[in-house]
Image 1 (tube, one colour):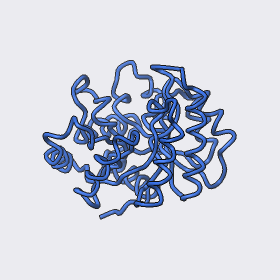
Image 2 (cartoon, rainbow, N blue to C red):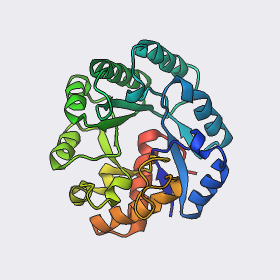
Image 3 (cartoon, rainbow, N blue to C red):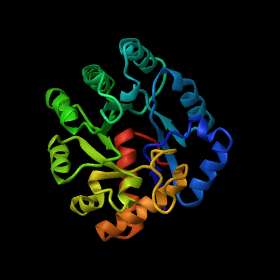
Image 4 (cartoon, rainbow, N blue to C red):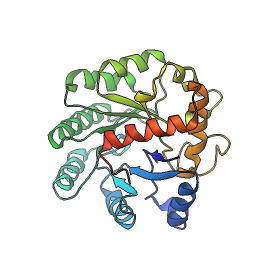
Length: 259
């Protein structure tokens, strides 16, 4: 069984003491590939160092996280755009809108989101969307920017049936399912049975959102197995079937190597 952790921040300092061991533990349960979304300009050195240390295992993305959008976001976007001409990246992310902590820069977040969508089209790359308390704002931007050239994933999907159907209507998106699907009151477990395996990929968002039974602890890619088991149960399919389908989806979306 081969699994892909399609959203992992194993390049951050929380893994400095055991990054290699973390990757080894993941391999023991079948997690063999990792998609690494960027955060902002300060995280780029760690991102590239980790992806270069584990070639064909860790695949970097380039983007500006919405919670890093502030007064100087234009300069941050210049950094993103510059790096896209210098290095091989497998997507634009993570990008989007986050209104959970602070709504001060909501208009700037919209602008940064739209700008990075256009970068993705220019470079023919998928986007990884971070949507937290912001589906309406995300859809507002996508309604203007979506076309046949746009593809990507709604990372850590937490919406309901209405949001699921709206996302599918855009045509080029799939859903990233993570630890929230294992939470008793997460709500996502009510929507997953409506999904087809062609519409989903699996993720951890390490070191965040650890699934049951490790909720509250540092999340790591090996925990993807708990999410996979829960999703397979909800879809009433064999976990091997789920692994095969979601891995194929990840390989196709991000254009990563299969071996």
